[in-house]
Amino acid sequence: MVKNSAARLLTSVDDLFTTQEERDEAKKETIMEIPLSQISDFPNHPFKVKMDESMSDLVESVKSYGVLSPVIVRPKDNGEYEMIAGHRRKRASELAGKENIKCIVQDVTDDEAIILMVDSNLQREQLLPSEKAFAYKMKLDAMKRQGYRSDLTSATPLQKYGNKTSREIIAKQSGESHEQIRKYIRLTYLSPSLLDMVDEGKIAMRPAVELSYLTENEQEILLNTMEWEDCTPSHVQAIKMRQFSQEGKLNEGVIQSILQEEKPNQKEQFRMPKERISKYFAPGTSSQKIEETIIKALELYRKRQREAER
Image (tube, rainbow, N blue to C red; front, side):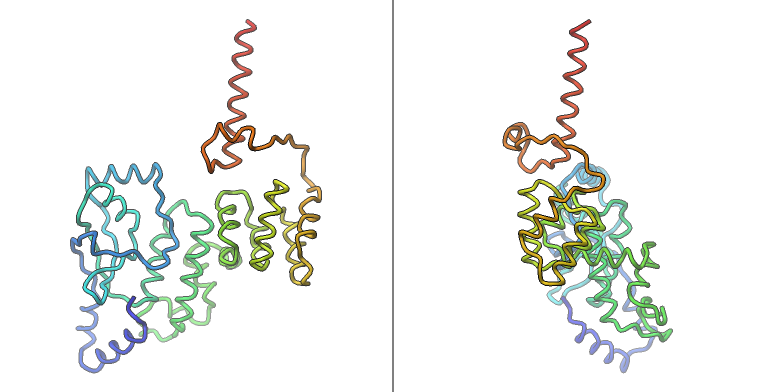
């Protein structure tokens, strides 16, 4: 990536030897066809490119009509380009057998690229909690590095928000509350396995935020205990774990004791050893999917029984 310090040095030289009109002209975006092989992915890109039905539809669309909306890239020092927004369209183009893709080329700094990348992707309708978490964190860090100059001549729009905090600015732009932004960013402190459970809907947002304050070792112990007990913590239980952690008293025994507490809305459950039914499902099938499939099978079985009795 182009270093911010180098970018600032070049800017200062430009200020000395070029006019404002020439500098504005240089910053204008251009549209061009670029070989896919010359475009690298954005480092630490927080948004996942899934090979799902939506991607299959996009591939077919690209085969038939090409990429209708140009992707956004920026030039690299080696003459190639770095993707800012459009990773899904790039992947779809590759799968569709295309060699080139229509691009908007913008010469921006590292932090400007991060903010543009995040803002472009946050417009998508369906985003995982983990995607929002790391996206907001990347944007927050980039905004802090920019320094929030309040002068109206600043080239970066984000620096014109006066004395508002970075989270307040992100909240205003995203339509989410300041507190919700804080909660999403807290998720970046979860272990990858726990964060996956948040994405899968196995752990709700509120308890997940509390669990993010546990140490890495405590989170690992929690994962093992959750698997053994076949349960996930409620919000109240997660708060208790955080309190014990802050006191330096959270261990496997305490975690197990907390997880074994009966939840207020807990109902009697029927349990079956997973190995008895695992052969009927593909590896990695979620518990929710298994439950839904079993219910549908039982409903079909009951329907056939009734038909046989007639």
